[in-house]
Amino acid sequence: MCAENKFFRLNFYKVRSTLSADMSITDATKKIIGENVRRLRVQSGKNVEELAGTAGVARGYWYEVERAATNPTVEMLELIARALKVSVRDLLEDPDGDTKSKRRKAS
Image 1 (cartoon, rainbow, N blue to C red):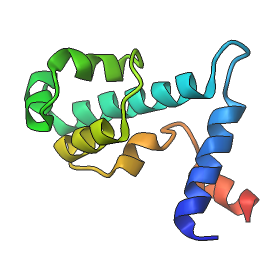
Image 2 (spheres, rainbow, N blue to C red; image 1 turned 60 degrees about the horizontal axis):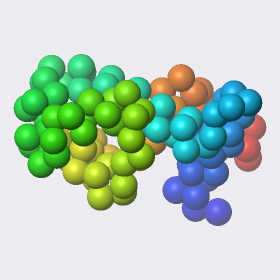
Image 3 (cartoon, rainbow, N blue to C red; image 1 turned 90 degrees about the vertical axis):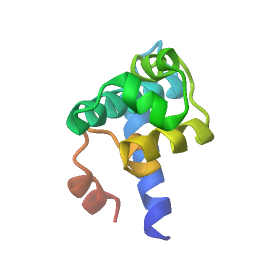
């Protein structure tokens, strides 16, 4: 199995294992994406207006992504990732997950 597939498999199981009884996988994934977008925006030192303009998305839409209030398409994730100068994968990774120990367990 290639490393890329292992990453997505591990991330899927991490998301699935952190779901509350009333939270769907989509909700958990949107929450992870939103947390990552907000964290990366703050780290970049830029405000939402600047990054949304760079990405070519509405400022309100950017806020919705950060609040996990919308389900961004792959195209939108690519635009946001480019504006933040990161990969789409960086937006999907669980910031609280210990990927090193999970990779060892999965092997």
